[in-house]
Length: 363
Image (cartoon, rainbow, N blue to C red; front, side, top):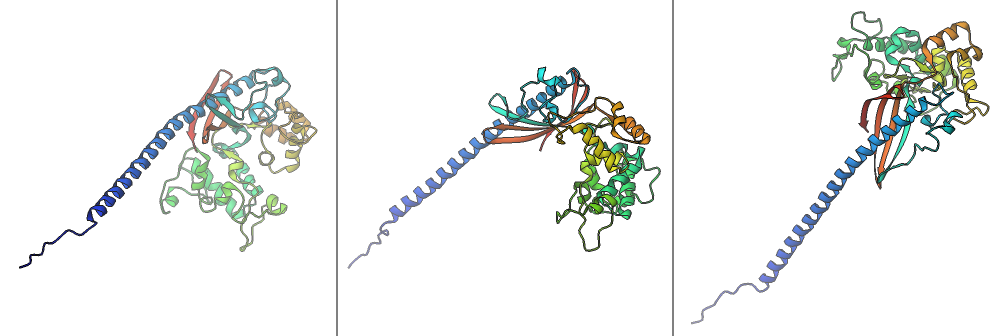
């Protein structure tokens, strides 16, 4: 009688060993990847902290430059040819502590900072438009916004920054904004940030009014820019500039005649483009380029008399303009090797020894 004995399949041990090796290899790869990620995260965290302090160092550099600028003899003004604005510096700066200082790739420890300083007095404070609503309407006209749009946008902006006691005919209050999806309330108070305009009736559905340009990016004809003709129903609106180029929500409320661009000057001169160009010509010097060594900035308000302006225009500029800036937006690029981060600060300068940081954030 034969007895058959079942034997285990040959090669099963080899299969088990291979499976074990495969599982261990996968676990080792996962562990190695985890260690690499953890190391990367730790390195990023370390760089984040270093970049933050570099960003703060950039703001302190800006404060130093703005402080020294204010102490330079024979330059009782702020202008585009000065070092803080990225210019070569005036005559007084050549013998000041600012000589040779660079705002680009300034070495700080193991990293570098680059800063760009822009004064906010070059723009109109949007929270003051209720003092002269005609300036707001003039802005929209120069942009080429149609008559109906001018009424809606102008009244809605004024309603947004004012208490809800006396709504304007074409404006909007909370009852309108509550009907939207999603609903929200009107601010009924001064704007803290200009981007609030993107919530205002007439602008929220047409952000190109805020930013300028159009979806097609087609340059409009000159008559469209200056006379405010309405676009045809089949033509995309194309604005030569946006509200963000004219207005700011933070400033002293005055406008620096040395840094305001032609569009801002034209708005405050009630659309007089020739007068705005005269002011630009007076301050840019013989080469006709702003921010160069031969610039001839205004040193005082009285020099408006030489710009060929009417008495009414001189009175207007004397009331709202200045040759000094107080509020500055500082953009800082902090860099360590391949890592970099952008920071923004708002500074308010009362005096060379009193420059406050109003806000500091990263983008």
